[in-house]
Length: 549
Image (cartoon, rainbow, N blue to C red):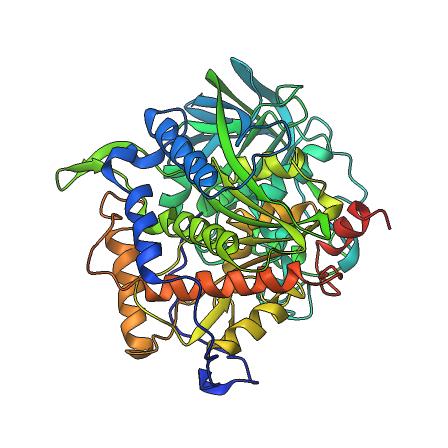
């Protein structure tokens, strides 16, 4: 998962099931903790070597997954293979030590890591911008459904655009803008780079501000300095900006001052409807990056359980198999096992596949089980699948994604990340009530967690997606216990070797979540309708296009 949230105070619980005291179903669960534990121990064992792409760990985990799919009697994807090759390129960037800003008698020199970071998606030995005019384009958003266009009236071809992090609703000055505090995709840094490239910008720099970004500069820095995996493209990234990156807030204020502008005033203007972009006082930017390129192919692993009467309609279960491999030793341990992240999702995926296969009644729609690569590097495997689907997107009913399920016992809540986006949450609510649980909206919508796991790749192309798990109220030990466990995981285990299987874990909650996902999928498989994005969702238009409407 991309950047874990640590918020732990539940708000706005499902009013239809206050306290989560609905009577649970008496039906015998199809998935138990022992099954979860068997798969979880296997995928997070030391001999999986941390499951890093391009390593022996990838060979071992992908082979294991394919063997399990075959053992369960699931069919390979069209073409006869359980593997979908994902061509990736590793870019190790060495940016110029400074960014030079000049013009109007002013000169600034920003220092790499201290003031800025830059990287590139272009597959070239060197990329550079020279004397590129600097412009401020607010949040860098073009959102017709919100009547918002930060690029309106300004040609930015060949220029360097400076943009704010998050989106206009997040500032809090007008809660009617966008989705208020809840981040939309327009607030994600990935979107800002995409939009700048669509407008022909040479470079794009996001102003880092800890509160709206939801993470400190240290997180930006650690992500920027490591080699980056990117999907290989036919044009080798030529349609991307030459330089992508971030400026610290202090550096941005100095930049605006050199342009004869007050940063706070421009920030306020960017948060109001009718904002218009503007040049930054005749200033230009010069910078470059030298790259080392390594091209290799990773693998998604997938299988299908064919449906009966509507086999040409598909429900996808997804989880990512990758983690960080063998790295810097911490407390004498150098294997980054990734048991919770995302061994738990893989264990749930395999347990659900087993339950579907063992069910007395086969699904009417086909069920696809997809374990993807490259999530930790930016949802690469799921994005590749979404662009090269093994099964038609217009026939894909939904994606049900599992990423980081908590091994702390059964929960009263089911927290839906991206609550309010699609009708799938209605299916989740019904399944949760059958377990005596209540639905809880995303507790930190301002952090944009909905855009940080593999379901988003499906959402981006219009396929309704569900990303949910229990995680805020333990059935046996309450809210404070879970808050403590989540904080301990975040501090001591997340993306560290300590994220390894613990025999003392109570896996009944993961089994509970997997069972819920199974029931949602079974219900979808027995229907003829397609769940929809709700009015106002930024993904509704993409679904309409994919369905040919």
